[in-house]
Image 1 (cartoon, helix red, strand yellow):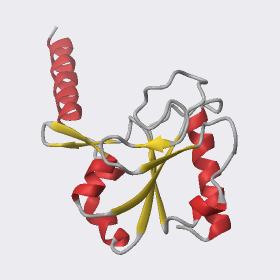
Image 2 (cartoon, helix red, strand yellow):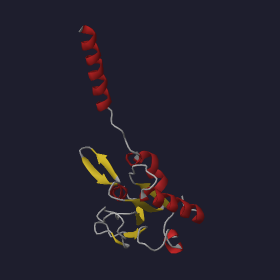
Image 3 (cartoon, helix red, strand yellow):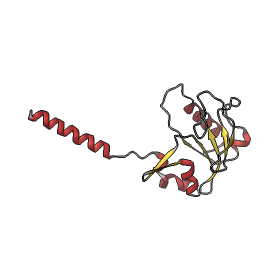
Image 4 (cartoon, helix red, strand yellow):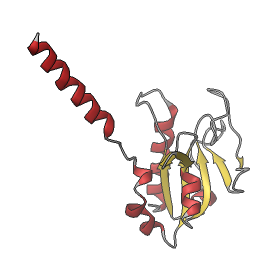
Length: 157
């Protein structure tokens, strides 16, 4: 009985330790990347999953960038749109973000597989912040790969 209690106590302590540690996502590591964005025109590929925890609040990555004075010139949106309101498979038109006035260029409009030359010339750096479940048939990572390929073709970081 003492062995079972000791094992139980050890497992409880281990679970408490695991729960106490918080994982910090890349977007929260602002000290590492904000200096690299200074003076750059930034495009953001993101959707409703691009959030950062600040204390007890959550803030969208776009809002975090703007709060720190980053010049965000465009938003690229994948399936479901930037704010995540479109249904699966629904084509999403390009638009303007109502909250910020920044143009949203859809990568899921049913037309082009990648942005036009004009859109690629509108930024210096592409930031990507989307959560994905890691399955090969999900469209988020395909959108990301296409954008990375386009950035390589246009010399964008």
